[in-house]
Amino acid sequence: MTQEPNRQKSLATKSGRFVLVGIANTLIDLAVFSLLVAAGMAALVANVLAWLVAVVFSYAVNSRWSFDRDTRLSDARSALRFISLGAVISLGISSGFLLALTGVIGVMPAKIFGVIVAAILNFIAARWSIEDRLL
Image 1 (cartoon, one colour):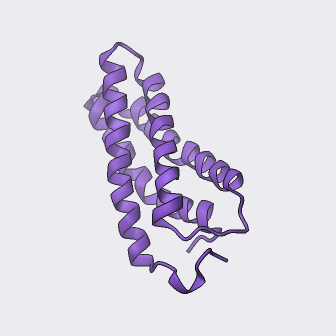
Image 2 (tube, rainbow, N blue to C red):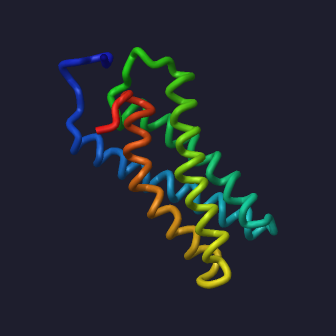
């Protein structure tokens, strides 16, 4: 199922690595988002572009370091799953939070709340995308 069946990572190792990649991914997302908003771009457009940069980084690192790749999945199929689910979960949730909460708590707090909520769901989605299993 994976490239090295005898050296599969434990769920704790996968979770820890996913958290580390997630922190880096979140910093990338927030940095790109902040720069684009500061340059005058609309928050939703900046959110989409920042997410795109972050999701490419996230897939590259998670698929090679955090999870045990299922070799039955092609790179293209795995990436498509990862990006599609990321669009629904991360981009959908963060955009929803921006739309719902920006007027109440401001742009950055709304963005951060969306990132936190999406992170929990993203672990399950990433594992399915890369390892072809949910739990």
